[in-house]
Image 1 (tube, rainbow, N blue to C red):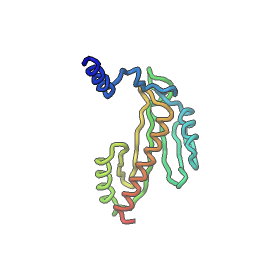
Image 2: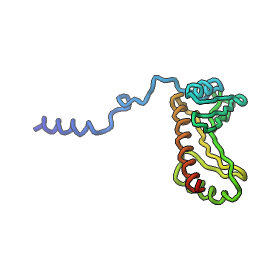
Image 3: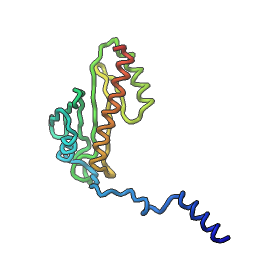
Length: 169
């Protein structure tokens, strides 16, 4: 009988959480708490974008293969008592619009922002923009930064589809 109970307990314990060491979330990839301009340029260069221009240190203008344009700008750079480099980056794209489209785009932005937290849509006086802010404090891998860039592109595609639909283009 003890064997049956022990076997049952062993089977149940397999479905329970195992010790943290057995579930290691550690990677052999280097973790960055801040990204230098060179670090970010290296990540961007690996993406195979159609065009990559550094407008000024830490500001990169990018054109992807389908002609979509975005800007990546490093933020909170060389802060006191922090590692060398920048603790964050903003990824942004924008589109102009005509004044009569503003009410439609404001409603779209409110709906989009309510549905998605991965990026924010902002309507300015003469443009609509999408932005994603990425932080590195606490540590990220370069693969993670690449995924952030790809997620921004994915969400931008969703926004473009929604704008085309809402504006009847």
